[in-house]
Length: 298
Image (cartoon, rainbow, N blue to C red; front, side, top):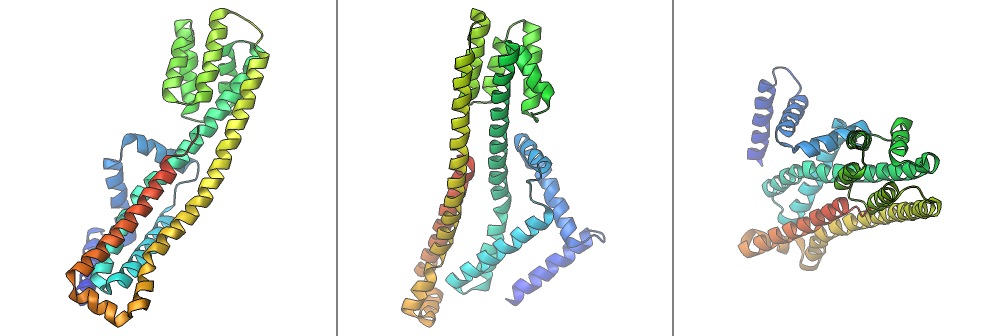
């Protein structure tokens, strides 16, 4: 334990010396930010910037609190397994290292939800504008100029308009938007407007009304699913943490002193405990990945 304390003091001194008078926290945060800017994928940088713009990205103080909670929980849980401060501290550091990945998953989910909402706004408003203008390009212009859209969807709608005027046809515009946003409601609406454009004017009121009803039902289902998934996610995390604490039940059954003796004297027991910790961690991490990636927009 003395070695760990000395190591932390040495690390603190080195960081402080390198920071040239800055606070250690600011020095570490700035360097982490530099690493992120250098190695993070460009697509994710866009996602993170959008989350910041929407006020959904964690602040530095929130990240600091998250680090403290993760490190504390990781240390306490693994200390209850091994009763070894060095092992527990090692696991605490490893747990903290997964925070950027969890943030990445969270931001991807928030961005996916944002895109779905924007696409729903684009489809709904384009259909309503078409009911007035009876022209697909004019409908897109009305939606674009109304200010209801945000980037990147707003920019992509402008690209669609420019392509339509440049080519004198909407097919390339439709293909462009369908390739960017793989949603059934987008493709169905575009297919209808393409048929109207190619086959000439006809009464589309009923078809458009039915499409609006379908969009409303889809959005209702998505929001209901989002609430159900959020409630299940909380229960899942609680269950995952409870699995770690099964070791406490084992200690109550065999006795703490006997348990510590088994851990210290038997390498197989130690390896089994490491396996249990890693397996539970993989279970939690897989669940987090599924919750954040499989949004179920359509």
